[in-house]
Length: 210
Image (cartoon, rainbow, N blue to C red; front, side, top):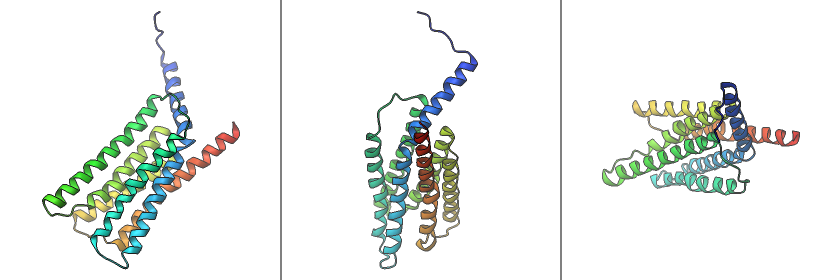
């Protein structure tokens, strides 16, 4: 049986419908994923900020890894509860986007460990740039894919904070916890927590209409 080719109008309608379906699946649960990452990051940053008043030992900075441990585990638990549905191209694009971000985190961590153990050099500031700029970029791209303005703006705040952090490091301005940790907290509120609540609110409205 010969397959019928789609004309331009039908192709656009198909692409639009795929985006709508992906947005619908995304908004019914992934707002919670952003909230988990956001609140986890903010809570750990506040914990480290408070500890800094009592101890300046650099070993406490390893608590930042709790973000990856907790944040990388809980979202998977949330997503497993969601009903499995066939994945569209935009679904796979979304998964690929965050997979690349995850691989970048692994590479950045390995590089920082290498320079610390082999060279005795501290370059952990790279992880701060990653957490702000790269995650901000991925969040904005997610917003572009799903046409979600809150993610685009929130991701833009992350990229701006990451770029500012890079400039500080280039001109040898130290990332003091007195100003950088509050910046980190504010950025993740804008980048993860606010969009997460907006997405969930929109999902509730959609469910009530249906």
